[in-house]
Amino acid sequence: MPAVTSTRPSPAPIGLRKHHVCLARGDGIGPEITDAVLHILREAGALVEFEPLELGERAYRAGHSAGIPDAAWEAISAYGVLLKGPITTPQGGGYKSVNVTLRKALGLYANVRPCIALHPCVPSQHPGMDVVIVRENEEDTYGGIEHRQTGEVVQCLKLVSRPGCERVIRYAFEYARRNGRRKVSCLTKDNIMKLTDGLFHRVFEEIARDYPELETEHRIIDIGAARLATRPREFDVIVTLNLYGDILSDIAAELAGSIGMAASANVGGTLAMFEAVHGSAPDIAGKNVANPSGMLLAALMTLEHLGERVMAASIHNAWLRTLEDGLHTADLMNEATSRRCVGTAEFAHAVAARLGQMPQTLKPRTVDETDAPRLPTCTAQPSIAPASSTQKRCVGIDVFLDWDTPGRDAAQLVPRLQAAAGASLRLALITNRGVRVWPEGHAQTLCTDHWRCRFLAQDGHCDAAALLALQQRVQAAGLEPIKTENLYTFDGERGYSAGQGE
Image 1 (cartoon, rainbow, N blue to C red):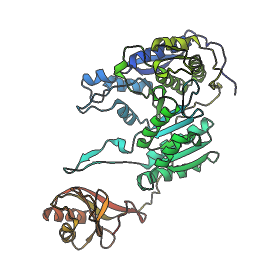
Image 2: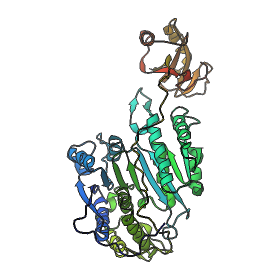
Image 3: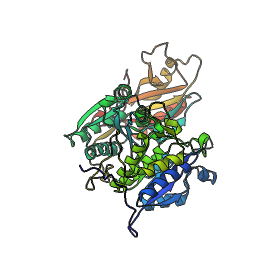
Image 4: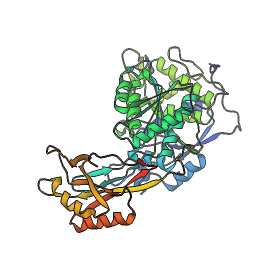
């Protein structure tokens, strides 16, 4: 593959069509690191024209609870690409996260976080680390569906869909194939969450068959995270669910060198958002000490997404050369590799001055004009779908109660619930916080005021009328149902977590 030319890129020819990109400068240090990046892009002659947007703190104060005015939504939809600085979300008051809102509302289902060590220029515990984490970006517990159900218990729903799993998993495989990666690892906790995480694992195995040239593996998230921290060379591309991916990607970025230098892409079918992943750091805002590297790498991912791969590689190599030359912002200063501490603006000028130069120690970014984009755009609809002949059958119901009496003894509930069951249902199980307390509970189990009571159909099938009548009888017995979950089988397979004693 031909290397990037070592000459400084020429200014863009007059009249050449530019890419239009929405730009949110962000809060705190956002404006100054954005200015630093814009200086580098201008000096490089990048063919990008930015449309400024007002997102974040000012938008919150103007009455937009999600920090996003209507005009910003319209611009993002029109231009299709957003480069975003760090945003401050006000504490309390019902404010929503700009990041989460944008990802979910715009269908940005894949979060791509490269975590590459720059040792020895940036000290790292793992000098050879080169891992990309692809995180599902819309589902899992990040649906933000929470309820307080009793005086003592709150819940958060974890929602995982087959289409959601397939989109992000296929994206991870496409990314690996397009970037010459060798292996894709799936990390879940399906030994405990057999339905939600189990679905993600199952879809991973199905999709893996379409990529026989790639090595694949599945690991349980806890040991997988431990191995990532101690043996990152065992990984190449990791795909995982939203919460795990959020945690893992920050850990991996810090292991590689510094989360302050990390960037991520948020990619959907037609839209994409690129961002520095660190916070807005208001304590150092306006002091010209922030490191603009994370924002710069986000801008380079934007250029690659737009097809400007040669330009992105040239700027990337100038950045690497700057780090090699020991011109470091305060967060990177160390006796071994730093030559001079520079401010935000000075660092940007140093990178611009090295455009056209190649790193001598660090691995240069090389690219061919004919290369496919590093970030695939997966617009196809999910192709793996449940069989249309799936037979769904209701076989019972879980009734959750708010019930509190001295001693909190499930045995006191049993006669009342058995009487309420009627002729068509039977009480099969009572749990508290997921722990079985009847039948055959243990006196040592800590019980709260939140009880799950499982009723199963005597003949293996029940209808809505029977379930409604049950709830009415439970209420008539002086008990308070706070939630119900119908229990279904799909083609004869249980669609709910099993409970002992059924």
